Length: 381
Image 1 (cartoon, one colour):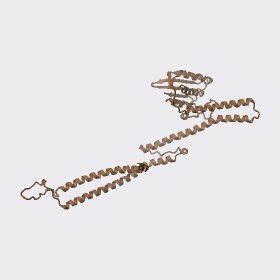
Image 2: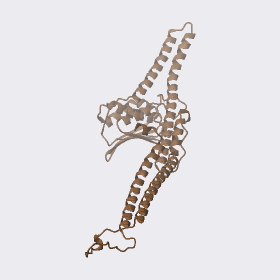
Image 3: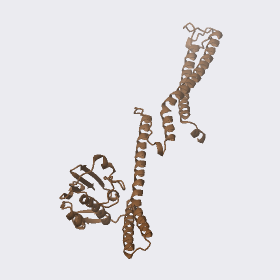
Image 4: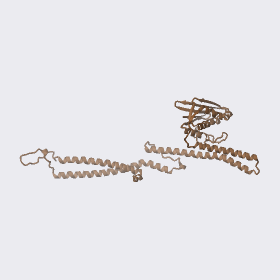
């Protein structure tokens, strides 16, 4: 069995098909030989002229022709025996010829059928991180080989997308961590350049260092929450109205600063989840709705039941998100604004944390947005 598994797939198919072909040929040959021998034996027992000859019997007793053996000339017996042997030899030769021809034909056809798999294997061995855009040529067939080719290309699409996200994450994370570290380093260098720094200089430097260290800690904490594999969540009933009112109260400075109107509609009273994580997720969504809203805008928070499904929507009247950005906004450190402005704070991890928390609860989050009209985030559970 180990030896059989070491040979190529093409040869295995050929040997298996050849074995089946040989078995069928042997059965067919044996059946033909048996039938031929039976017919020849019947001919041997019959009269060469179609008339039964009477055998001479001594005395006056005469037997019926069916009660006596038929005498056939020895020359004819020899001819029939030779014909039997010749028939058997020809049968064996045909058996061997058909089997060999069939195996050769199977080998050729199997080679053509498996050629796309060889090309797939060859292409797979040449694909690396630097050329993930390479693909298997589309076969435009609906057989198993065509399906395998399409599945392989789909897998490469997912891998390429994953590598692009990973590179983007690494670049964004490096930028996010480098900025506060550079600020800390610059403050220390300025302090060193001053030969006689005053107490106020030390105080200013320490405040800068403390502020940026807190920012670094916040980024690291968010990353730990984002990639925490602990699935043990303490699930309790959460009063949605109380939670949303607490979040709005906490965001009052931002809301009042931009003259934003808030509307809360709670047709759904409670939801089961982890109170700390659910609060964090909705806080991030409502905070974004306030920070990126227009002056004098509006935020509508609605919780309702639709059959067996619960739905919470958070709608704002902000600037909206371009359609081509929507597929990336839940990625870590991704920012719609490429200017990386620090006016609104944050590290670009808020929506990533939202998605992680939502998926940990088995819920789904989606977003609809139009430029100039605002965005609507929907959570379904």
